[in-house]
Image (cartoon, rainbow, N blue to C red; front, side):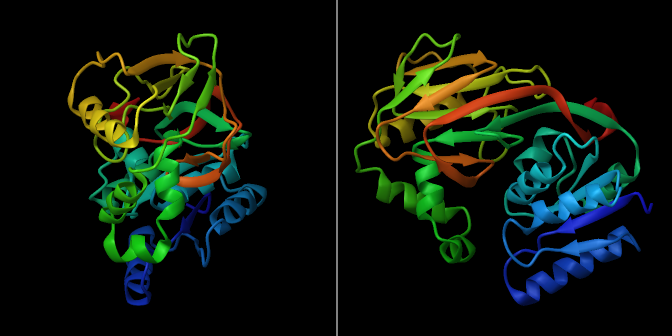
Length: 290
């Protein structure tokens, strides 16, 4: 057991954070738990855990915590474990983890079923599930943490409504597999799910060495929001305003200041260069997922 360390990002609010910490500590029984006090600390803690020789590094938090821990352990050979306690746990859903049962998730960590999944990066920064250039990154940028905490997922919708009236940016897309050179908004998936239990990237497989890319062409934001729903709820993408392709490498540039999000966290602006390392991340998963 001393091969395992837990990095806990407690949810907002002091009482809630305390309860969250007590719950995790009772489940992991004696396993060391390092608690983050501010953002980006999880990455440093994960890196230190690798240096200290831990073989299993567990992210206890949401997708943002997972993203930080992965950046701390990338290319180290350490295995990632998940205790999904965040508001959004899309990567845990993608892997088939029982997100509502932390005890079962801990059993999976203690087991040794390792799945090798792809490790994508954007300008050298790793991510696990998805990236967005344009609309959703702009929403993340303009949704303050306090606002998010008080309103939860609703806060994103309110921010999206405020942004919807604006003129979307012009994005230039460079990829040997794209039949399109320009768009207003681009989503890049490693797995199938986006924003929750929604199979957005229809053909994505998390260990095929490929990005799944959805480009919204020259559309206004209100149209994009309408098409987002269409994509989520239809089995195939057949509308001419949307381009879907798979690729190993992608570059997106713009003459404007366009933000980029990775796993729901802001990660700078265009230009952005996407690369993918096939099956480069070791993750502890349920048996049937392998």
